[in-house]
Image 1 (cartoon, rainbow, N blue to C red):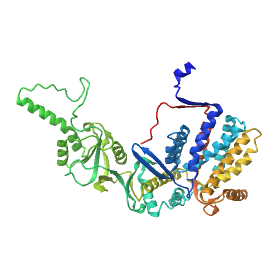
Image 2 (cartoon, helix red, strand yellow):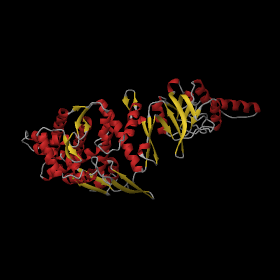
Image 3 (cartoon, rainbow, N blue to C red):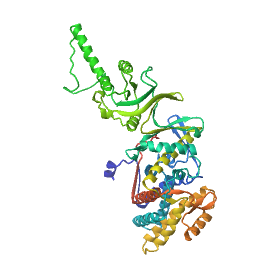
Image 4 (cartoon, one colour):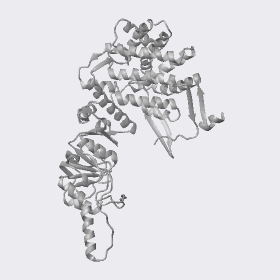
Length: 522
């Protein structure tokens, strides 16, 4: 015990074996169940409140990841679920709430099997067999999407009427602008939020918007045929530039004895200061973005040569402009080459509320200017737009879709029950548990629609037994082709839920340190 205390701090919580399994499952189920009522178009919102220093922050959201992030402050298993949910969104753009609800159901079933003295490894193997079979069944149930992009956005909107025709139109315009070198790059899409007015007044700016004021008030408000240079260092001579002996552009030892020596020194200093300007003039650069301050004397010279400049530009902004225009961020401007210069069509200055902005147009990238009465409304439309763009990318890679509204889960559940009968060992029980967990999706949809889940599940089983595999849960009850969902989204949900649940079951010891306080995220 003395040896243990020297290795592990005594200020920790520790549980082992079945206690660790139960603790992990309990905490994970608790986190996942908070997402349950948000599933589907009629899903509920959550009000989350916390203190950030002296400020009280209040959020109203139905975004599964935002809710899980709050829960993950205290519970380590919730962190695993939250990170997995983020990966689901990044990979597939949708299915986050479905993943969390299904994972919760798998863990509940696993908890019941552990109580029946079925070993965790047996449960994991049964879930593995069921996952592989479910993926095969889904491949056989797919239909080819007709390519109508409005149908694609219906997947994200899910009958919430959030993506209005005007919002859909600007999403379609933005998607091609996010494609770089033949593939979709989400970093080419940016958002600026402007409170006030309605969501309908949201707009798309085809380019990059930077919240900065021009470096000199007399610089032009509009430029065309841009050639851009981006630097991370201060142009000219830095006030403090530490070099090793023998390094640097010049070695200076001042020993001024005559006025002529002072004149020569000033000439050498001016030459060093003008190197950056001379390089920009040589390469016909007319726009400079600098992450550091720019000397006043250099600003005047750039103004005289028609060069527009921005100083103290945020790193994220310079990276966005670099991606959009093809420019490369360099250290010293004196080392700038023609390959480092970016190209764009137009630049103009503007205002958003009281903030001055600079917009660079005619390049890759797009900026959504979101309007809304409340911050929650703007957050929701931002998530919907991000998900829409990812879904467009997913269906661009694979056009196969599946019937939604819990239809595919009901079909998988039915076929997996038949599949389980082929096993004489305890894996049969685990496969059946996996099958039952799938029905939690249509059950949850029915509850959120205000329907009787027992009646709806019975009706769904009847339809699917009669080979009507496209029947799912709608607002008025069971209906054919409620919506469509990309195959890749559903495959990702099934596979990721299996991986996370099996990982939870493999943890046989839980150690929680109590020494380091956990602060709320900023």
